[in-house]
Length: 395
Ligand code: ADP
Image (cartoon, rainbow, N blue to C red; front, side, top):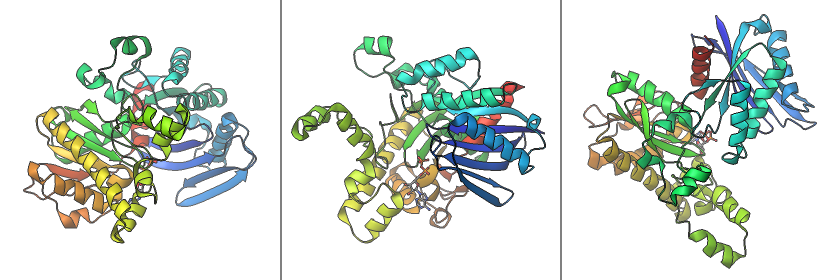
């Protein structure tokens, strides 16, 4: 049995899951936070137990060393040789990567060079890769990119109508994100509706703190709502999503802001939080709404409207849809949001099964049998996708 680690490295964190493959059983999972600080926290869950420790962890290599020692100490693995591969989530693959790849020096260099496009994420992902190279030099590593799934978009979906040389010189285009999640739920939905992936048209709705939709034709992404960066598209927890760019210089002048402050406002002070003035968390918005808070109602309506607008656009673009699938924190759990989105889509012949929709966090069909389009909830599983690709590429 092959054991594979699926890793998501942030600038001061390391999230991991150890899976038995190809069975896809999760053996252990956990999170190291505050790497670089005296009071870093190491947390691991395995066989219904949980262990948490606060210790000094100076860098990612030490975090990896500690993780591997713990796996052996707790007899989660017999020896480190049990681990045959490490798969890394990497945020940006630019136009260079349209699939996951085995990591070589060349690949790692390219990931680092793409930091222009993802300054917060790619350097952190690269640090995670280097840490594993140092501690487990003989084990093969694989990079799984958030952007890769969307590399199949046609040019009319990914180009902006900005000066063409911005694209040629700087790679200004739509890349899209959450690709691993869109791919997972599209593939799973094809199984659930008993169709072969090649014959399906599916609209995937990934709505969490960040959110995006994808139009998936025959298993391939043909459009997605995030753009050059994850700021585009939907109304999100604290992000505006699509706005008129001329608002920026206008408000910058009025408020005497510089560009960093203005962009930060769009990323961190907008969305559900900015509109409601209450919270970025949809649960708080739901609560505000139930108390007739007008700004919470407005935030909810803006959120729902934008999701509906994209579904309608993708329905036309795909020439119909076999299924719409909700995933991520809000998609998997928020009964009110799903209900509101579906009722606004009644014109497409979508009918909600209220009882089925009254559930959280499970794989379930939430449309009625006579609904023209099937609507599903499918909890996403990016770690399983990372482990699958890792196994495929190291074989
Ligand atoms: P991230 O993009 O950070 O991965 P998540 O996918 O975890 O985010 O989604 C976070 C969102 O999911 C929050 O807005 C939160 O309100 C929502 N959410 C999580 N659990 C529930 C729940 N039980 N009911 C409604 N919304 C939920």
